[in-house]
Image (tube, rainbow, N blue to C red):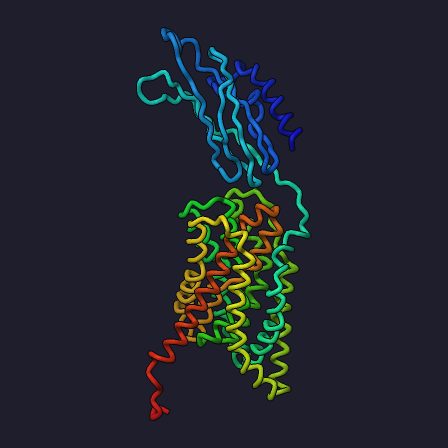
Length: 447
């Protein structure tokens, strides 16, 4: 990196002597003006040299003295920041300014360069403004095999895996064959889930990121998080909130399959719109692993239901206590794993992330009611759209960026994961409390 910066600086310093050779009425140049984009490596300091000439002799006629200055602003501070501007000190119409910069995340930052006349009693007069120069920050190298290691070293995560497997087997015992046959005939709930998860939610994430003026990298992180398929907790919440468990399992499987195509398309589209120049890697192996980790234990549970009724009763009795332990354990693990990432989190991304689960619930509920689905299916579609697999989005971040940048961009999936689990836990507690203390008892005569 140092020799690249030195070469760039020496080239620009040599070129500033040619600042008088300009085209038309151009008074500002970087170097000889033949290059419009310059490259710097990530997370390094450097300088650029701007040469300027204050208009023509006629424009200075009759003036005994005049002053000028140059202002430079990066239009993408996450990619490039301006540290200071120093004047070369040479008097006369031809002057040069040394701009100290620091590169940040990989990407391209356009520069806003202004030449101002200060020899006025009123406000400074703008002589020329240019936005056609830019600095491209090139990504450095990193070992992709170690990017996820610091998220998989938590012993609590491994302790929960057996509980998760048993819990999924228990959910397999809840699968109803008649409901499956009904979904084949009327797949509307499955299609609604795909529309909500992969069309409406990414669009919402993009809109709210622009509304809150989030940095481009965080905006992309939020969009990718909202482009993730339904999470494994969806059918858990469907059970606890009176939804259709069989539908929830099917929606999770279908959305995970669709994610293999929808996540790359969504990431590429919104990455281009946001101007984030990163090679995004969708973890197809992780998606396949998620499918197997859902399908295998649930299929085993279906087999147990058909062959071993006594064991089925035991598994069904374990669903609710195991589910509660997994919810609390998920919140604990997410907070512990994301402690370093969320140490420097700012209010706007917190507001955006906290709102995602509730917006997803409302979007799913609105879609389900619009097509007239029954109550349990409405709850399930709402939950499946609102509870997304943030771990897949996290894997995309960690595989697509270097460690420091990946942790920064990963703020969005961590906040959404913690918010989703916490908010759904509150909803479950509220639902249980209402049914126990507020819901009127059933009328025995109605039976």
